[in-house]
Length: 126
Image 1 (tube, rainbow, N blue to C red):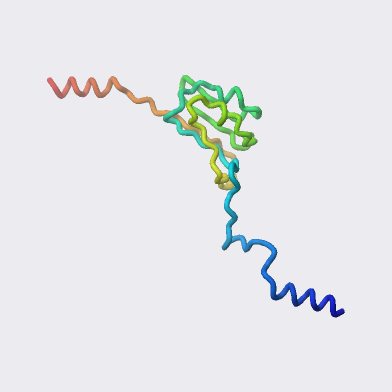
Image 2: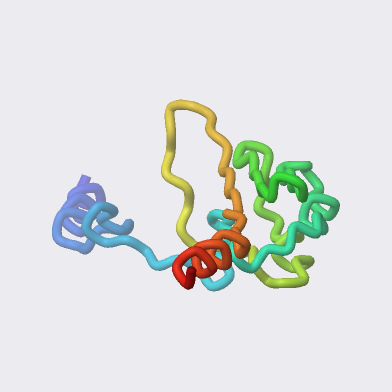
């Protein structure tokens, strides 16, 4: 009986064994793989990341200059990040926000028209 009371009092007046989560957030470990991001401006749409992806989660379309990631297929193995020749893929520590519907992460590179400014410059000089 006294052993049990000693245990109860020790637990009442000691610090908690776990982290108080909403107040104390644990920092991420080094090299945590949480989510995949792309810097679309650097991408050359070579498709190496698509070919190296073991779960076929990445679709690269060179013609329309789009890069698409199915986040529900991605296993966060970082093979695409390591194989990208331009290093435009980034593995962030932050995890994706939970959602109630499936969505794809699609990035599209805007094609800059260089013909348009030349035509405008010729029109203003006339």
